[in-house]
Length: 440
Image (cartoon, rainbow, N blue to C red; front, side, top):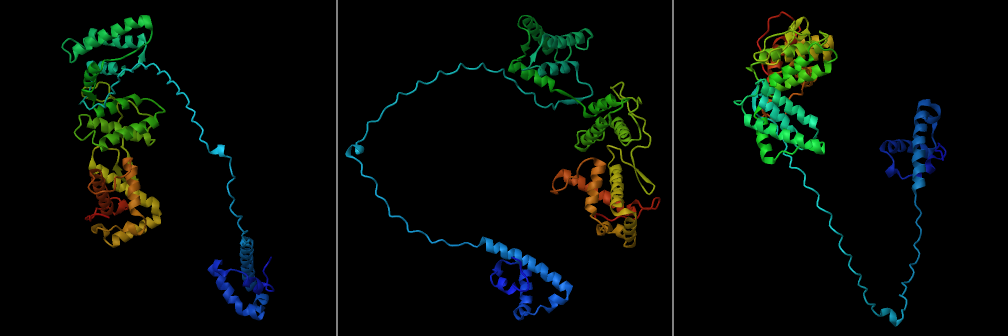
């Protein structure tokens, strides 16, 4: 069925207009005067009017067909059949039958108990005294503790035993060394286990819980200084190629160690770690093809190597440079973040709009106010968050103000934002900075 000017009134009377969209209802109300008199002159003479009404007829045709297809025909209910009486059963059917008692099944025999597993005491994370070099006795005890609960061959145990004996011969372990008695007891246990393995092959190492607790205490008494551990990893990468991904992970690990407070300013290897970090940044940025060898003294760690620092990681904006590859200087971090923020604004706004923003900032003397003109041109808060991630390789901590991490990051962001404003977002290199305001 297609609606036309000839059948419109007839079809319209059968349509449930309550379910028709309001826009179509309005068109219907507008057409009622013309349709009731059969006056379709505008429809016939004006192409635009005809096009609109034809489109309206098409929508209405679809609705009329849908309503016609969903109309239901009520079928009168049939008279319910009268209830049927239950059949009459013979008298014997009502006699109770005796219950048949089934014999109980005999319980199945219990399976033989499984042999008890060896008690394995998990070694807790080390929180021992940070040292440059872990004592030989502690190193061997760590290796011995790691064997507990594992199946090992005679070769595995002999390797550890020979290592201990060699250290004793080279007098790296003596009778006066810390834990010398425990090392002696460990040797005896290893010899006995190796003799036993000659007959049974591989053996599962099981250290008595009481002894294991003692050995674990020794193993956890010392831990490598985080700075030394990271520098040793750096040495393992120097002079090699194809280690950019490892270098990136090591750079991030260095930053995380400083950022979390595991390594602080005043660390004995602060300068060396800072140089290694700078070298990694230079290599990752593509300014060097490898981490070249460059020896420097490292109190107590002979052979540590680094990289000659030439123009440490820089960020440039209109000729301005700022050191960003430093681990410890908070002032340098503020400058790096301020410049990264300005770079992000430049990237988002493009040069023309960025110049307009700087001009408006200078004209309004916004540097001396708490408000930042960049908020009128873009989402400046998001630009600062992106800059923070670029500089510090992590998300900025935001949230509850009483969280120390949030307070630290917000202090850094506020200082960097102030620096960017007082330097006119570094758009005019060499210009003397103006008095600063605070906040954004």
